[in-house]
Image (cartoon, rainbow, N blue to C red):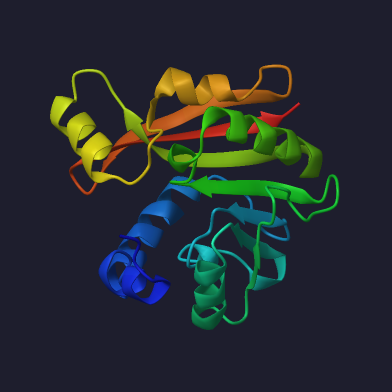
Length: 195
C-alpha cells in the first residue's frame, strides 16, 4: 500500500525527522559550494531537502505528481516539476549539482543508465552528482536483512554495484563516506564528477 504524500509526511517524514535528517545532510554537504549554483534534486519526493538550498537555484524533480503537488504546498517558494516519460526537461549544461538522495535503489539498472546519459547532458563541465543511498555492506547481516526486507526499493546495491553504474568514460567517482542511518540502514555517500 502506497501512502498519500500527506500521510507520508506525517508518518515517514514528519517535521522533526526532516529537521534531524537535514542537519545530517548539512554536515555531509558542508564541503560543497552551493552559492549561486543550480541544483537539481532528482527524486525529490515531497521536497524535504529543498530548504537546504537557495530557492532561486533549486529545482526538485520526481515522477510522482502527487508528491510534487504536495512539495509545492509545503515549500511554495521552491520550484518542483514532474518527470514525464523519463526525460529531464532541462537545457544542456545548465546544472551545477545533481542531488540524489535515496532514489537509485528504486530504479532498475537499465533505467539508471538512461538517466545517467541525461545527467551528463544537463551537467555543466565539472558538474557533480551527489549521491546518498542505502548500501549492502559485507558482515552487516542484520542491517542488510532489514534494508532488503523493510524498504520498498527493490534495487539496494553494494558499493561496487553503485559505483559501476557511473561509466568511467563520463564520470570520475569518489566514495566519501559510509555511515549508519537510524541504526538499521547502511548508507553510502559518493560523488560522480562529469569529465
